[in-house]
Image (cartoon, rainbow, N blue to C red; front, side, top):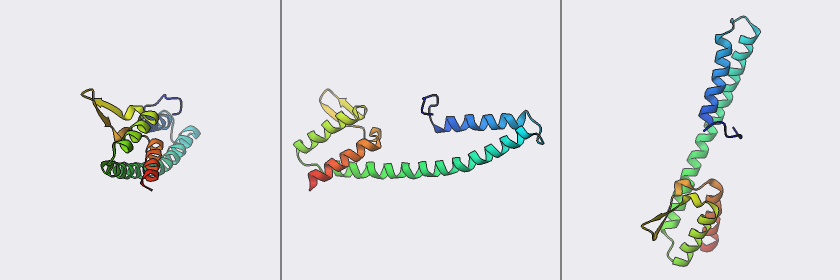
Length: 129
C-alpha cells in the first residue's frame, strides 16, 4: 500500500481475498494449505470490517469539518482575512485552488486534506479571537 502499487484500499482487499481464495480453490479442504488460507481469510475479513467502520467514521468526520469550514468561510467579512486564508490554502494544499475567468479564485474544499483543513480552522479561530 505505501509503495503506491494499489489505487486504494478496496483494490488491496480484492488482492488479499484472491490469494486466500485461490489457495482454497486449488487445494483440498483437508490440506494444511487450505485450512491456513481459510483461517487467514477469516481473520482478514474480521479486521477489514473494523477498518471499513473506522474509514466510514473518518469520512463522516471530514464531511462535518468541511461543512463547518464552509460555514465559517461564508462569514468572512474582510478582504484581508480572506486573502490570508487564500495564501494559506495555496501554501498548504495548492491542488485545492482553482482560477476561474483569470480573476476569480475558487477553493475546492473537497480537495483539502485533513492536515490543511485543521491548520485553516486554527487560523480562522485565532483570527476570530
